[in-house]
Length: 155
Image (cartoon, rainbow, N blue to C red):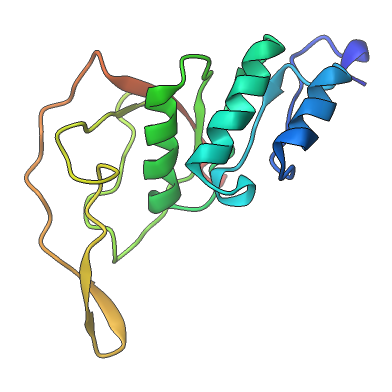
């Protein structure tokens, strides 16, 4: 099917194993691979898949429909992989993540000065619900360390 298209073909959000991506790329089945970090098994598997895509000269644009925690892990992956095209971004309202990554001019600013994955996910149980701790102060944007996002807002 890819040979019959005039536009790049992106796929892979439903694949699980590096071997699945290897088979797809060996068959010439994609121009852009979209692994989902929550489906493939985390950061280590994403890096394995990225190595396969590099060997086949294919770019990576992670599938990211799972919310602010998955976005933070995807940003961490993106900062360590130079072959990334862009990151899918789905706005998500949460009460448990007081300072999620938010795009500014189509980019997510990296947060190397923040703990963990760059977001505050700590909270306290209160009446069976998670109450977020206080939000951190705003940090100036870092223009040289940013990631392009594709906004997947509902129409």
